Structures are given as C-alpha cells and as structure tokens.
Image 1: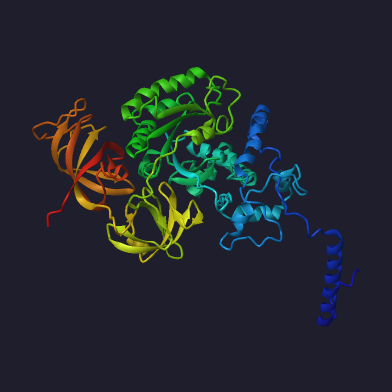
Image 2 (image 1 turned 45 degrees about the horizontal axis):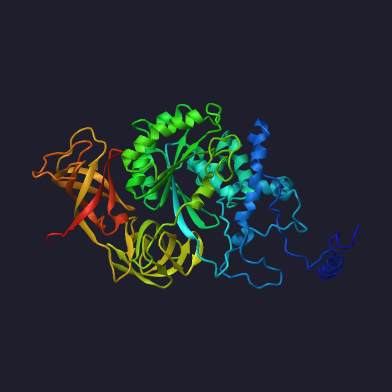
Length: 580
C-alpha cells in the first residue's frame, strides 16, 4: 500500500504526503499533458440527433434530417476569430454560461470526435443525472458573437398564432434547434422527461414552454420568447397561447410583432374545429391584423400526419377555406399572405425543402423569412416604448418593444402617464447587453428613479422633448365584429390598445359609417349592431397613453372584448380634452 493512501500518524506527515502528490502530478503533467494544445472545439458534423420515437418509425426521417446537420454549421459560425488560450480577450461582462454555449468553429480538431455530444450523454454517471433533474433547467440561449464593426442585423419580431394544439410551440422549438439556439443535449433531456410523462411528442415545445404548469398541461399560457438569427436578420419568436382563456396574453404578444405566422393543423377534424365560429384560427388572424401585423405567413402544420400524408388536396382545401376569411379581415391574399406546408415535429420544410412534398416549389420557412423585404422604421422619431412586463432585479427592469426612436445608456426618459423621470442604467436587446438600440428591437431596460410598483403594463417610455398623449376620452371608428344583441351608449367592455388593458365605456354614438362608400349618417344612431361601422365616443376608467391612428398607428389601434369574445376593432380618430 502507498504511503499516501494510509492515514498519517501525525499532521506533519500529512504535509509530506501532499508534497509527494504534487511532485507526481507535476511529473505527469510535464510528460503527458500538452498545455499548448489548441482549445477544445466540439465537432459540428456530429451525427444528427434523431428523437427516439422517430427512430422506431422509419429510417427515412434520419436521411431527411441529414442536411440539417450541415445547415446548422452556417448559422452558428461566429464572425469573431476563435480565442487562443493566451488571449485575454474574454470580456468581463460575459457570463460563464454564455462563454460555454458559444458556438465554435467547425474544424475537426483533436477532441471533436465523430461521437460528439451523443457519447457524452450516455457516459454521465447516474448520480450526475439525478442532480440535473432536480434543477429547473431554463435553456440559456446561445449568444452568437459578432464583430464590433459588423452591420447590425435587422430585428424582426415574429408572433406564432393559431388554434390551441396547432403546433405553435413545437415549431418554435424546432426552429430554435435547427438554427443552433438549443443544443442536442438539452433536447435529449427534454425528450427523456417527456417520455416519462407519456408526452413524447411534446418535448420540442418545452424549449419555449418553460414553466411547470405549461409543460404538464401541454398548453402555452404566457407569451414565450426566444430568438434566432439568419444571415441577414435577427428574429425574436413570440409564442402566443392558442387557448381562448388566454387571448389577452396573445393580444399583448401580437402588439409587439412585425410579422405573424398563423399555424393551422392539417389533421382531419383539427383544422375544422380551429376554423369554426368559436375557433381561435379566425379570432387570432383578426386580432393580428388589428394589432398592426401587415404580413401573414400561414403554416399548414402536421402534414406528416397519417390522415394527411403530405396530400396536395388537403393543403388546397385548407387554403380555399382560409383565403376568403383572410380577405374579409383585411389582408391582401396576393401580397400579404403566404401559404406553406410543413411539419413541426420532424422539421420538414422549415429549413430544408421536404422530399415528400415535390408539389411545393417555394422556399422553406426560415429562408423565406430571410428573403422578406426590410421594414422601414424611423430611428429619428420620438421615443415610444410600450411596457409589456416589469420585475425587480437589482433595480427596476421593464420589457417592451421600441416602436420608434432610439434609446441609449444613461439617457433620461419620462414614464407616461405618471410623468416620472427615469434614467436608463443598462440596456439588453434580446438578452445581449448593448449601449444603444433602434426601433423594432425587444428591450430589457434597467431603470433608475422609479419603483417597480409604480409601473403597469401599458405605460409608455418617451423622451422628455416629445411626450405621448394621455387622456380618458377619445373618439374612434369602430367595426362591430361579433355581438348578439345591440350596443347602445353606456355599454362597457375591455379595451386592448398597444400593451395596455383598461375598462372602457361607450358614452355616445356619433354617427354610422357606410362600409362601401364611407359616407357618414346625418343623424345620431340610437344603437349599433353586428357588422356595422360607427364613430363613437369612448371613456376609459383610468388615464391611458394613446395617439391618434393618423399620427402613430401602433398606438392608435385597439380591440374591444367582452365575456371572452372579441366584439369590435377600431382606430382612434381624435383625443378629447378633459373638462375640469
């Protein structure tokens, strides 16, 4: 037995033992370890991860997933040069998780065995697995390092809308995997946990549905957020809930979006329920239009389902039913709407064209998003940032999308309608710290000079020189969409305007508007009913921030809801000053 392994007679001897160990270690290090070795680089050409239940079904899916492995390389290749061991370039504000998850160069260097991550997952000791399961794993998105002088990619917010269980979260999770934002290891873990709950097809949606309640029920409740990048653009995914009880959350998500993806299920029976009178396919498409989404992509999901089997007839049938409705809502089917088939579960036609679908000749989903024309946004306009959410974290943190203007660190802003002057301590654009941000970006701001309790969703950050309008009374043009009885003055509903939710009363009906000619009636109507357009005066319970539709469309559109249904949509025509 070695002298080192036995217990020492006295503590002086113990030190001796340690010295011996140190000597052996230094010898071993000098002979076997190459300290000058290049940094370890994972092999991105590793075998593609294929979920267990697909392996059983067929080997075809493995082949179809093949090109994705190569495609991953393009997206996650950083523009910054790889750091050598000696480089002291590691910025202090970068957290270790970010460093660890940075995608590395795709060179097959010593260490990047073809086994890649797959081998490592199996080698983990059971003890370590147990520990991992206890922790609540929130996937930390990978941060793609960019060169300091690289042009800023355009920010585009994409909201996924559609009926409950159409596959919105699954498509979101699949896109994050295909673009390298969620690693194989995390997905394997999700798949294992989902299998234990007998929900093996839900594992992809867990990348976006992070809290326990959403995972247990398989329903999104709050708007999930994630982001991914393509060659030209930076996309933020807003994963809206499809359930009708959570429509208010969905409106908040749609109000931040530039682009909506309406997900419909091609499975027999599912498309029909989503599209009937009470289904969310109709309501969501209409709410997205009201929230100011100009471009709509309709993803016909679940094309791989045995009842559909990539059939062109079923795809055309869904398309024929939807087009007239989208036209009625106000989308132009030729310019604003694009249909495409896909499968969220297998990832077919999301990044690579699907083999089973020769009749679809357009671009797959991600390349199509990349090829869309740029949005023209003015960065020199007044600062307008409607607040979506707020929380405490070493100060007051607010979340929202910058609608116009630009914000920089240490800038003085005013929180309306309470007129609190605040200072921006730090700026995070999609969890990456920056010094300034332009319009269209999703921001987290840490503010000084205001308490978290003093902020409500629907408040707006403005610059002091150009404050937004606030008030309680306004005139608006309203279209009654669905209401069984008549609406008279004194009718109460819930008003959703940008990110703000407030009770509102229709105090007077001013005139009816003819839908075809736009002529206004000479006499005041005593009531309005479904499908009529009128101009009315509305008064909210509290003071809210709003603008006229003509001056600032994003803050001048609204929806009226009552008893869980969307009753009317409208736009603000004129703000009425309060009589003291």
